[in-house]
Image (cartoon, rainbow, N blue to C red; front, side, top):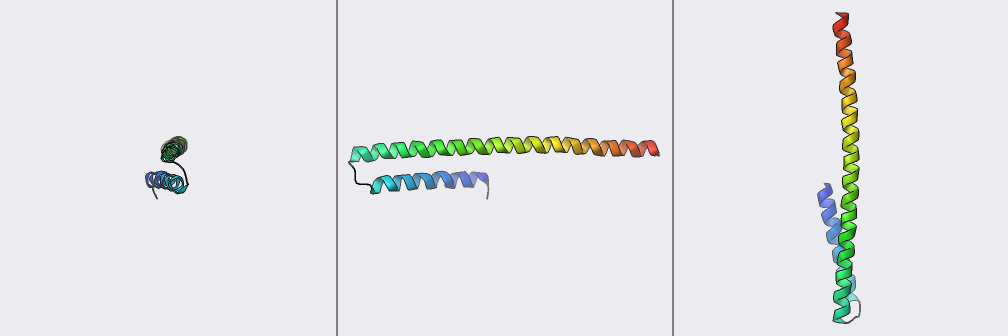
Length: 87
């Protein structure tokens, strides 16, 4: 499953759950609207935090892979140079 689909499902599920809970609670219309607004903002903030965490992890993984790739290239180049000098 891609990260984008996961995040979309996460956000939609959070919003649907929050709105359903608010709508089923016995309150006045004004209180209900305020709760919906608060729940929506909380779901949005949570989604933003999740996106930020995923981006940070992706950047870290990309950086590690790049570093390891450079190390591998360096080792291979060293082996090639060694073989050239032996022949």
